[in-house]
Image (cartoon, rainbow, N blue to C red; front, side, top):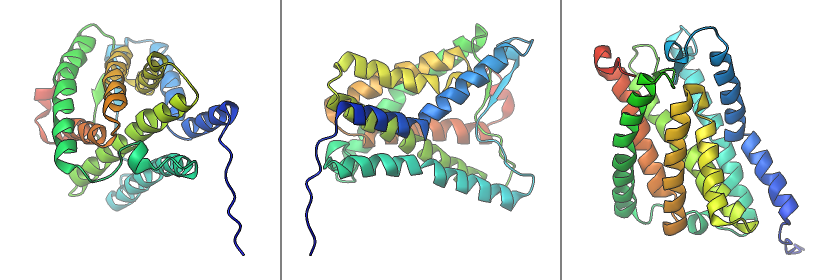
Length: 257
């Protein structure tokens, strides 16, 4: 005989511990490494602007071993997302309803996502240029894979992985849990935005500011619309443009990065 047990509502202490664990397994861990990376750059004996921050580096000189490492990295990076969704579902917070993670509104999600990508991307390019000019950022290398046939598909998948991980954890999951804990909306938006900026600090101070502003916009959008899917679309478009564009465009066009 199966006995149905009602799960008691989680306490603030339990939710706080859960948030810490989820973040330390995912983007909180990335934030710690980003701070250490920035400190290493600042104490390296040369200006920050003369150093590089490389995204999507090659993992092996052997192409198919490199491909294996790339795909494994993408797969395991998404495990914290599954954990966050599981924890919400366990507490009867259906992710499809609570976070708006479903495919029920493809046109609306695509439209809002494209609009958000344009609203964030164009000013973002200007900020990157300004930060580079002022020496507040390292030189950003968005992709450094070998010139192999699978490079572009892997970069597209990596962009989508980044979008899913960040928007589900930093926006959907974190905001939902902080609201359960009774945080004020201003503090919730600030926490989400600062976290987003912090794990980009390895790129420099300009990257922190730009991503924190993006975090404010995305958090406010989620609080108003209650859907993560448009944010995933927007983030995917931004990263695909950065990763694939850097790979395919002539390098002299991108010297300002």
